[in-house]
Every structure is written in C-alpha cells, then in structure tokens.
Length: 317
Image (cartoon, rainbow, N blue to C red):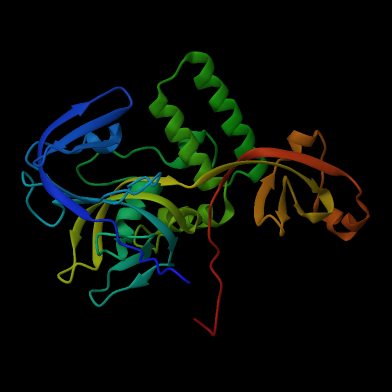
C-alpha cells in the first residue's frame, strides 16, 4: 500500500505595519493581524509604520528572506522595496528604450516575482561608486581609496590594501572607511571587475557587470511589473553574497602563474582563487607554467569563498 503526499505551498501573508522596534541586532515589526515579524536591523530600519509588507510564511527551519514592502509615504517608481535571494545574474543587455540592464532569477520565490531586472546605472552607483560631476562633490576613485596609481600592478594592489588596512586598524578608523577599502580591493583586485571599472572611468555609460555573477541576497528599490512576475529595480540598496569558509590542500601544479600572482583552481571542489606570492615567501613568473607539472608541493588553504558564476559563450550568444 502506498501513501500519496501532497506538497503545499507556504501561505502568503501581508498587512499594514503597526509598529517597528529596532533592537541591537534585529528589528521586530508588528503587522495588522498582530503577527510579530523578525527582520535584520538593516532591513527593519527601512520599514515605517503604515507600510505594507508581503511575505511567505517560513516552514520548519526555513528562513523567510523574500519580502516585498510598499512605502505609502513615498511616491514615484521607487516606492517598493524588495528583498530576495538571487541566483546567477546575466551579462548587460539593452532594452527597447536603449537602457542597459541585467536580470536575475529569484531563488525559490513565493510572492509571484520570478525575476529582478536591474538597470546598469544602479550597478554603477552601488558597486563601482563612480566620481560624480555637476552639483555633487566627487567621491574618491577606488584607486585613490587604496592610495595607488591607476596603472598599479596586481602585487602593488595587494600590498597597498594590506598597508592601508593595517593603518586603519591601528588608528581605530571608522568601519565605513574599512568597508570602503575592502570594497575597493574587491573590485580592482579582480581582473575582470577592474577592467569593467576602468572602462566606466573612461566612459560612465559603458556596460556594468554584476560582481562575481550574483548569488546572494539582494535588496532593491523599484516597482513590480503589471503582471506581478518581474521586479524592475532602479536602485540597489544592499547586496550580501553567499559566503562559505573552506579549508583544503591543493597541489601547486594546478595553478597558472603570472607576474605577481597565481590563479589556482580545484576542479573537484569547484573552487578558484588568486594566490599572493608574499604568502608563500617566494617569487615566481610565467615561466613556471612550463615545468609546473614537476611540482610536488601542496599548500594548505583556508579562507572565505564567495559563490560566483561564469559567463560562457554558447551557440554564438
């Protein structure tokens, strides 16, 4: 005898916010049906009394992260805030209005929204922090934050980051400065993102790619489409990538050696990272690639890895 089991979709709840309590590490929102909704402090700080919240009721140990907030005190196309887990983000495309955008699928969406479309202008503002003109003061470039010239080598970028981070730590600098420093290094320290940033400095209207291909939690402001299946984001408020701490051993022969750095890959674990020669207290050059198959040395690696995606050409598209 067999038993048939039906899988029910968690119910969707929505209601008007009656109160918001900001705590040290979280926020508690009470909605019209007296439900107490626990949010991160960052997200809760953007919720006000009178807003409408829609969310899927989490089941079991599941954490409900997809939330749609309607700001009644705000008018215009950015009166909606949408927080959702996302997967792979596409390369930039051009729509019918000649606007550049990227798109991503909502991971396990329950509110009917299956995709998020983000204007490249929003990516430039949030991730790349380009210098402004006209009536606003120009923020420093990412190179200026690292205190290096724009033609600095990969090795010089790593050294500059370590020195500046040590300076801020010793002086007890504000967390905002350390965050800006880390953001600058994460962009110009990665060849593909650095090339995108340099192109944007030369031409602010150049296409902007989503760093590391997406994968994480995205909070955006914008509006849903008329059919309720797509969210059009006009501003990126926050992005938290998927992170995982890993520790493993890797043979040096699996690395591609360049001047000042090495690209290491572990196909079995699906891992890829750049290796600084200062860590191994040695110096290499591209000629090592000719005889690296003779290397018997293995290194032990421990670090935090970011979930990422790769752009690949298929069928000429």
